[in-house]
Length: 446
Image 1 (spheres, rainbow, N blue to C red):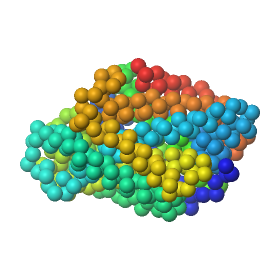
Image 2: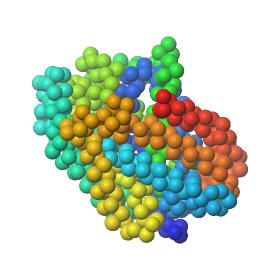
Image 3: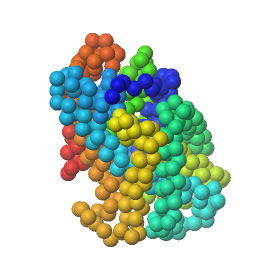
Image 4: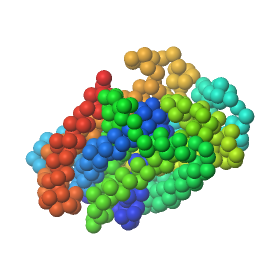
């Protein structure tokens, strides 16, 4: 396959696209509860440190492979391996990445359907006056209803694939340019509202005054894993985006901007969420149920709570929508690399992901008792194995390929930092980032 002629229309479009890929469940759902479970500010500091030492160098590695290859992930890896005199079997890493995002998108679509359900319920004021037991029971009733779950899963996936089918400039770029600024506006509105609550001060202390006595080896592992997960590296999605990167754009500057925007979303979400939680005297270490049980109760008891809760679930929906279209792109790009038109490729991906997603849907009803492995449901397996094993493994192999295998001159040109900057990046990836990714992978396997 020849090099793709598609490009992002501007440097800003590329930054928003990569930010859209990175910002999602990891920032707004996972970050608050994992921070709460791991001691607050100390975890936050470790998370930011690992973003710099682990996340950013590997993100740069993944993007520069796509930029140097200017093809689909499989085609770029095969082309660059050939140029280096290495085995063309490296191209199968692109297929592995596509399978990883296939699994992730299948459960992402289902969970995003929950946000649709909760958004509608919050607009209707359904949480007003309810206690924890009633909200939890309503959530369990929804999960056990395969028809409602299938409907929201189908609706969200349709929203995603229609954008991807429209192409890079008319679909992905146009939606990212619209939704990412809207997402930040909603976050700022929610953070501004949080500043008026009694829990704002305690939330800032919780997030920004570290208690290093709370740091354990497990907190280190969780911080590394979250830094890796939140930047969307390891699945070749960013490799596909690198292929569309403008020629004169600085890769380090773009990735730095993405990291600032990505961490900024997590911090603003944390401030908004913990302010409400502390205002109501609730436990910040509530776990995954923080989003679907604790927050609806907390918001519902505040003035204009239904409005702010509606905006919050709209924010979640927008974040997962932008992430999902960016997850779908490498799968569509790989099929395009095999000669399939974009529309047919998007339809094929959408139908396949929809079918796979039914396993997650039915694991709360028809398949609730089916525990195929490690006494885990299908949903547990699909959400755990791709994120804790496949992503770190993919990231490890991408980092090894970029830092050790692909031609150094092509890598240097794609990075665009000159000799000194390239050598610094190479040393960091080889001797810091790769060992850290190995630790994340081992932790996932254990």
